[in-house]
Image (cartoon, rainbow, N blue to C red; front, side, top):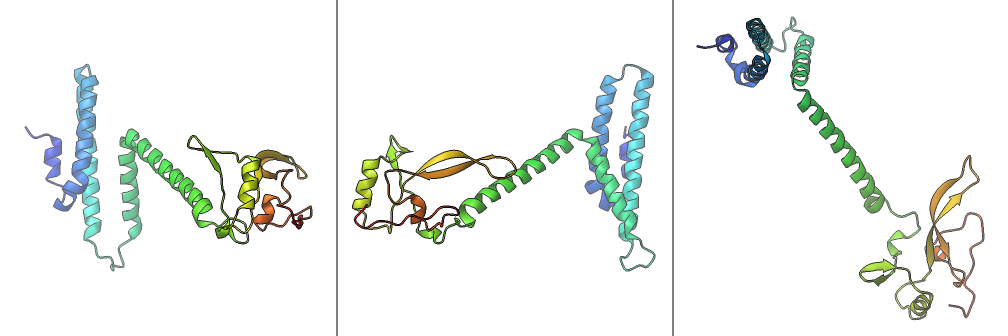
Length: 225
């Protein structure tokens, strides 16, 4: 025997049946099955059926209202677009409220997608798009020694040999990567810094074209490596 949903579906305009009414009817039927399994008394089951009929009737009424507004001409002066937008928003919020799990998953997926895209774009901008803060960043290279497939620190004798036999690069400089404390402002902060070696006359920042902010840039003496 057809239930209330089948009878009320005949009252819904054909354009709204499959697109709007059928999903709402399936959601109401699913909720009715869950509630009927939990109902232990005849009165409770009757209440479940009444709630199901009310939900189906409300969905049919909404569909008829949407179809009635859709049949109106957009150039009609008596037509107001605000009720149509309001009905769409109300219907969307109702569908989201009836499926809290799906709503939570959609919000989390959207938030994670936005966060991941923001992080990836920031990394791409800093690494690929934004040039290094040097006069000629395309001409600067970093040379390392490799031990067991991993980069390692360059030994002083090897560096001196590289500089003595260099015929490709304009200049060579060595530095150490350290974490230092920068003070002088409102509060000290930890920064990553490159410090020069004491056994090298020409530090690394002179080869990159960076001008010191505080001290003087040493010049390369004649006859030194």
